[in-house]
Image 1: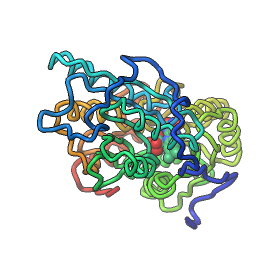
Image 2 (image 1 turned 30 degrees about the vertical axis):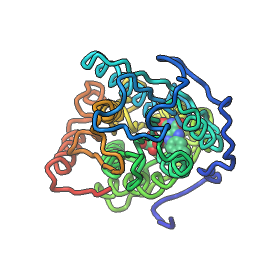
Image 3 (image 1 turned 60 degrees about the horizontal axis):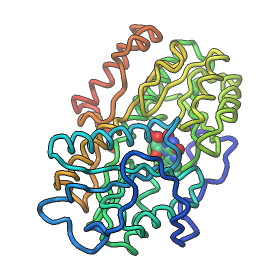
Image 4 (image 1 turned 180 degrees about the horizontal axis):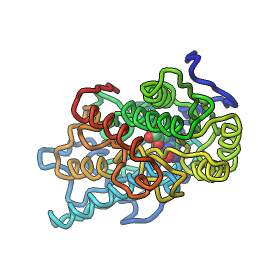
Length: 370
Ligand code: RBF
């Protein structure tokens, strides 16, 4: 991308999404409890039978693959919560005995494909659930080897594979709302430069093509002179590095920084707080992390998506083969306004402008196609 309004510094090569290894090393999996372990008998999906009109078996076994580590990443915490809630409520309502096993893939992305392949090869799971924009490519390849294995993928898109259902969010809306608030706050704080910050863990297609441009677009709706100072940490856990990048931006005149860096986000909040900067949180409600420093929360509701889609699977109604998109109007993306810490941190004038913009999205007057 060669947009002059996006200042890129300290970039590291994007980590390869494609895993090099295809050997199915079952031993590499970290099993984290929650329900029974693997079953010996192949479930219907892996054994080559269709789930049938009656849906999955009453004792359906779900394997939840976490592309990273659960702790510290709201998107994964929500995935686990929503899946577990769906299993629990389905079991209670239907007298069923479905179970979910959480498997952390870890931060080495080159190992993910091997690990997902191992899950499919084990024949232990009627459904493999995951959430990440890089999973559709991995799953396409695994699915060629194990065509009967079913997958439910959130935060990613793949249409037309009869074994795979995907749901992604309108992250242009999510990023636009964040950028709008970041610019309003910069104006409010009397920023000497019309520049807002973005600390990302790594570059990936959704970041480069949707989140970063959406964030800039939102800011430019406040004033067309805005630019984004874009910095890349290089991984999803190094809070110290994220803090250094934030400090450097603040020294350069940036007042408001958004962070999309998983466990490294902590460093952004810390450095912004120390340097008098402000933070716009992404994916979940972050106001409580450092009240007064976190001035915005542009959320997506992956817990709700996991709850609803796993429930559909357990009820036998998940439309495999389709790729769905959910945004503000559907209640899956929102900017959180009804939090007293937002009201305390942001002036009534800025909140009023932010609310008016959000209302224009909700009413359909402002259309931000993903
Ligand atoms: N988001 C996290 O919060 N934690 C992670 O560990 C994480 N790892 C990712 C790895 C890859 C390869 C990609 C493409 C995205 C990752 N994300 C992670 C980002 C996540 O999918 C989502 O884009 C952001 O949370 C913004 O909604």
